Image (cartoon, rainbow, N blue to C red):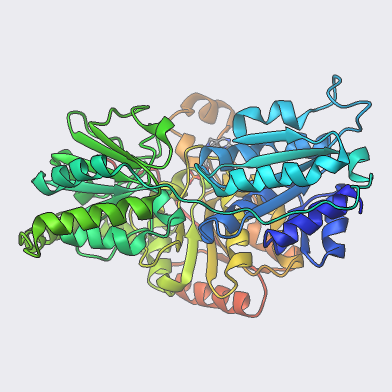
Length: 544
Ligand SMILES: Cc1ncc(C[n+]2csc(CCOP(=O)(O)OP(=O)(O)O)c2C)c(N)n1
Ligand SMILES: [Mg+2]
C-alpha cells in the first residue's frame, strides 16, 4: 500500500468521516478511495477552521483533519493552525512536504520547523514504513492532555512509496487524569467555607462533557456561574445562578459578582490574560482546576490548584462537598438569584433602547436581539467573529444548551466564524448553524461561502454591514479623516446570490424577523443563506 493510502486507512480507523483539504495532497485522493468524504475549500484557512469546529462541537470525540499541499498550501495555512493553537482546539494537520532531496533546504517551507510554536506535536516522516508510528503518536497526542493541533508532514515522494506489508494500527485511546485526592479535600473545604464564591468555567468543561456536574456544583454551593468565551454554553445562561459569559464585554451582574467575590473557582479554564476575557480582580482567592499544569500560576497566581480532567475533578469535588454539607443546603440560592436578577434587570433596562431600536440604519443590537428571539436557541449553534460583533453578541446571547455557542478569541482572526459555522453544520446537520460577522470579517474568508453552497453545508450567515471597520474609528481618526482608511464597501447579498446561495439585504427594523425566517427556510432546503443587515457604526459595548 502507498503511504498516502495507509494514512487514509488510519484516518478511517480513527473514526474520521470527513477530510477537509486543498490540493495537491495525495491523501485527499486516497481518502476518497477509502470512502472518506473529501471537502475542498477555497482557501486553507477556512478548511482548518471547519476541522476545528468539528472537534469543538463533538467535545473532541471526533477529530477534525485537514490536508494541504507543500509550499504554498502550508504557508497559507498558518493562520488556521495558529488560531486553533491559540484557542486550544485539537485538530490533525497533514501537510505535504517538499520531496526529500529538497526538504529543509532554503527557501522551501518546512512545516516541521515553522509550525513548532503553534502545535503541541509536529513530525516529519522520512521513511514510508514509519507512517503508522507517526499517525499513532499524532492521534494519541491530539486526544490526550491539553487539546491542541498536531501536525505530520509527509514529503510528496514518501507519499508515493509503499509501506511494507505487515504494518498494523490500533486506534488510539482517550485517557483521563484525576486530581490529587488530598488537594480535592482542601479545595472542597475552601469552596464550602467561601461566603461569596464565583464559579468560572472554561472550555475544559465542554471537552470533558462535565455540564451536569458543573450545574450540580453550582446548585450545591448555591454559587453563581460565569464562563470564559470558550466555555460559553457550559452552563445554561437562563439559569437563576448564571451571570452570563465573560469576554471583552460583560454583563453588570458578572461585574458585580466578580468584584464582590471572596473566592473564584476556575474549572477547565486557563485564566490566560487576554483582552477578550474578563480580568480576574486583584486580591481574590483563586482556585484553579485545569488539565494543564503549565497554566497554573502563569497569568493569575492560584492559592490552590487541581490538575485533571474537568469531569473527574468535579465528580471528586461533588463527593467531598456533599459529605461536608450533609444534605443541608445553606439556603443561599434565593438571595443570590435575587441579587443577580436585580443587576440583570437594571443592566437590560439600560441596553433595551439599543436592543429594540427602531431607527435606520439598524442597530446591530436590535438584529442580535431579534435573532435570539426568532431562532430555536437550544437547537442553534452560533459563533461570533472578531471585532464589534463579538462584543455586541456575547453578553446578550443566552445559550441554554451545551456547545450551542462557539466562543473564541485568545487570538482573534477576522473571518474565523464562517468556517466554524460550516464545520459545526457538518458535525451537527440538524442544528441551525450561524456565524455573525462584520463587513471587515467577510473580506477575509467570504469566498468560502461558495464552499458552503457547493458542498451543501447550509449555514446561515448574519452579516452586520456598516461599510466600516467601526471598532477602529477611535484608533484611526486621522487616517479616516484624511484618507478614509476605515471605510470598506460591498454588496454582500448580491455576492451571496452570485455564488448560488440565498442572499438578502435588510435595512428596516420590521424586515429583520421575516428575513431571518426566510433565511432559516433556505437552510432547511439545503441552501446557505447570507443576510446582510445595514447597520450603524456602533462602537458602544457593555464594559465596566
Ligand atoms: C486577521 C485580522 N487582522 C486584524 C484584526 C484587527 N481587527 C479587529 S476587528 C477589526 C475591524 C472590524 O470591522 P468589522 O468586522 O466590520 O466590525 P465593526 O467594528 O465595523 O462592527 C480589525 C481590523 C483582526 N482581528 N484579525
Ligand atoms: Mg464593519
